[in-house]
Amino acid sequence: MRNPRSPQPPVVRALQQYSALAGKAGCVIELALCHGAICTVAYRRVEGGCGEVLPNDLGIKLAAIVAEAHRLRPDWVETNVAHFVATANARHSLQADEFAPGLNLTVNTGARILAHKLHLLGATLPPGATDAQDAAFLLGKIQLASAEQVGRIHARYHPGSALSSAAWQLIAGAIHSLVADRSA
Image (cartoon, rainbow, N blue to C red; front, side):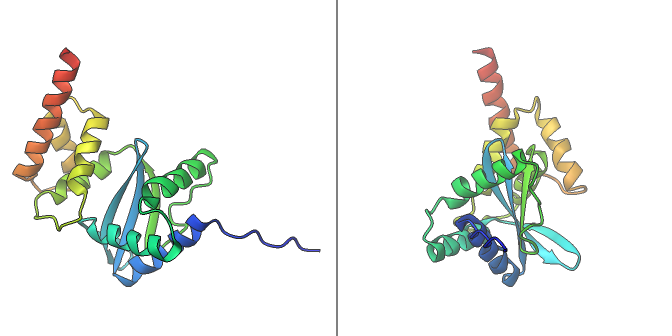
């Protein structure tokens, strides 16, 4: 006799819908667990994978739609998804493409995500985008030794693309705070 299939947890059903919505919108959303927090990175969908990095406002809007449809808390990505990714990673069962093609789940050291977030600061971000806040968070967590080190990280992922003055200001503020904290 077959065991009845266990129902999917609500977060899995929500992530499936999130992936479908992202696919319809022509993008891929990456939910990256970095230093205990989820950072949302959106990419334009191109044949064979991900293309240009986009502001994360669309990913945030889609998450709100899913939250309403599934009666989840507004911060379900930061709470439920963070727990789901951390638990799956601890069990060695995290599959980045489990919710492909519209959604990828990753555990990240933060350098790649930071580079993408800093890259976006060269454009005017739409209302609701949290890319600047994410970059500031990652700069605080990664605690890089110098602005030049941050520049090299950016160049690794965005060769030939210069950081904007807004990105340099954010970097300088983070490095200044780190130096002040170390000397206190």
